[in-house]
Image (cartoon, rainbow over all chains, first blue to last red; front, side):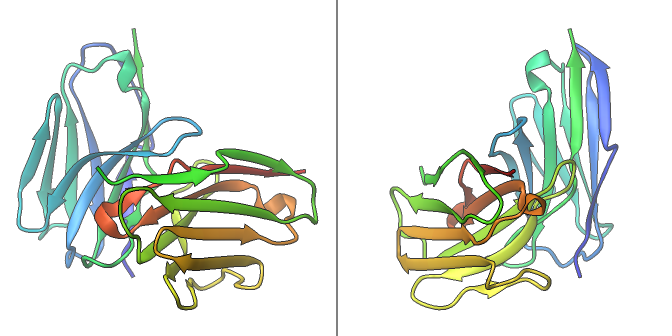
Length: 112
Length: 111
């Protein structure tokens, strides 16, 4: 059974810092991996999707990497801003038609 | 882009009553909808998978008679929490299989 773990559970940084969020998964036979942002009491916003054949994806200040063989992904946020404060969720799928398996998330606070 | 509209966004109900949550695909046909539940500080956990025109598939430990799922059309899937109790208070969110499009979620509080 696929399990997704995110470290750290919570992180507080001053504005402007670069930071890394970690995600690991137990079964390397994934179809893709996604990073989501969730604001308190809100739904999910997809940030980056990495297909199993890809190594990384970038969008603005965000960069996500994937090391499928070791079961790891990282989300790098450059020059963090208070507006980045949210919970970041990592999720993997094992097939194109299968549901996502989520980690518990990392709760990020960026202090102005 | 693909949009899933989920309603209501929040609901407070009395213990013992039933609550219906709707997820509607606005610009595409959703043959499959995944329903997740999220307790505070926990991850989203898959509850069930609904397929248009057939019975839903429930994950282990999810009571199918309590969480009724209907997917009668290609654009609408509903989750009804029957005889709700305080322990059912949670965040419920749907996701179409198409592009993993998520609804905005429903915060259910049972008092």
